Picture 1: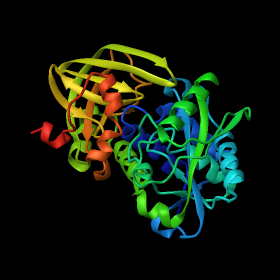
Picture 2: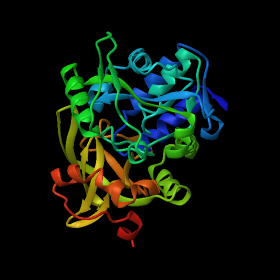
Picture 3: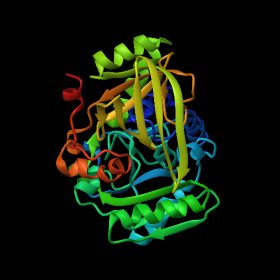
Picture 4: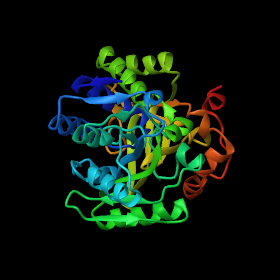
Length: 354
């Protein structure tokens, strides 16, 4: 276990902002969360998965809602309120907290609870990227129930949700969040350390930190950062040019839309919070669960809440964790993809780039 301070957290925000694949919270939101965490202490304990006690309890913590709304309404106490709901319902006390996903906002959100409670945050998560729906995780694939789920806002409006089907949990939690202005926090999937070890993707927070530090040390050069990501982190350059149009709307608690880039390597990226699929003309370039990420001309990672028309951007793809590159993993995304007009199979990014 090690203590991470301001620089490490800022590096995590940058790296997680990239691996969030367009979602997971805006970079600015993440940096504000760093400052918010440090209001409660000088650092946070980051625990390797295999150091968890088998018999200790922990739970998943995250923010929910539109990335655009979340970037302007920073959470402080709502994640802890949400955790208290499921602790009371399931009669346990959390000894650690688990990030729901990798993202500039959601990698930091559980750190708020960790520093407020004096408990560690786990170095890992059940996604390895950011995703738009709460059942799109290795915990779900491994049979860990989502129910009950605690949902809370900063002004202590809260709900304890129980559903039989995980898809109903997503639908109901989103509807409540949307009604409450598009910003809430949730806690769910309380489990013992032994179960975390079975199903989690290890080391993802440290990976985000490593990527963020590498970007910081490379300097403000988009070409250099793209080369770094391709060579050191097995990235694939998907697109490069100027953003000529953005179609976006918020509905049902999600940001939907598409980004069109023209220039050296034209690309069209379609998203539901996170980037789901990318084309050049009719050619498929990448599809979820693989990651479609972006940086600006200075090498700064971008979420979809950050992208503006006229920006120079590079899109870079990465392979998803192997747990998602299976028929069961891909099925988690097929409903969204069909909504976006794609009814094909999953094709690994490395095959598409051949």
